[in-house]
Length: 312
Image 1 (cartoon, helix red, strand yellow):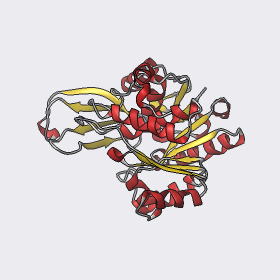
Image 2: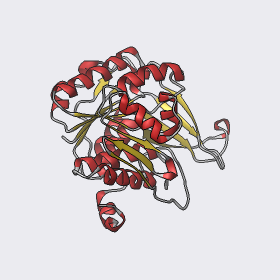
Image 3: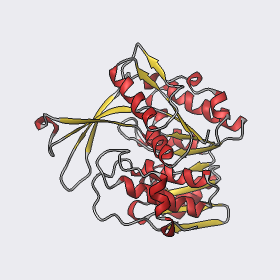
């Protein structure tokens, strides 16, 4: 197993029309969840990855499991919960600005995730454990699951990669800062966006954000900078890596998770941080070109065709 990840995935409804949801009558159905996005991105790039979660024992839960399994991700450790529903969310399409997202996830099956749901045996078989800052915001049991999963990974010398993925609809900036900085200090690699880095560290520049997170305990930090690419820092290796220009951005949602998948793919292949960051930028750029979280993620055959553009 290359990567194990866990967290909540919801059914996503996107209206066919642009404008307020109250006027929408037709919707397209797909899925959305940071951790499953990363899992699908990695599977398309040719890696063995397991996604763990709780889903409602309902039609939406089956839909999510089948969708993710159909992308080549191991879902054998998913728990179906008969007492709690699968969460849903809606994306309100806007003209000339990012979509507005409405979540209906309180009391969901995934919010009842327990530490024993993510087995130590599964983590021990992996090269990387991928966790995000969304999961600890869902409930106390989810927070315990994150901490114990990190402990399990450390016992087996599995590298822990942490994407803060701050969701201020789930908790306040102060609450997020306290918990996520504590989690970041226990992880090997931290992948904040620039705004997230500012919230977590109080610093402004990518260099200062990265330095603060290194001082906090991380071995390596990558600050995602959107169209400007990313800045990484590890020991004596620090550099900005340019992004890939996208002629027309269709939907920005999922780009950060695409970056994480590409970056992890590079590390699994034994590439340097610089090369792994560049691959992350490439995969993230693909995500911008279509509607939906995962629909734009490339397969490795597409990336391989562009090898001259991948810095090695």
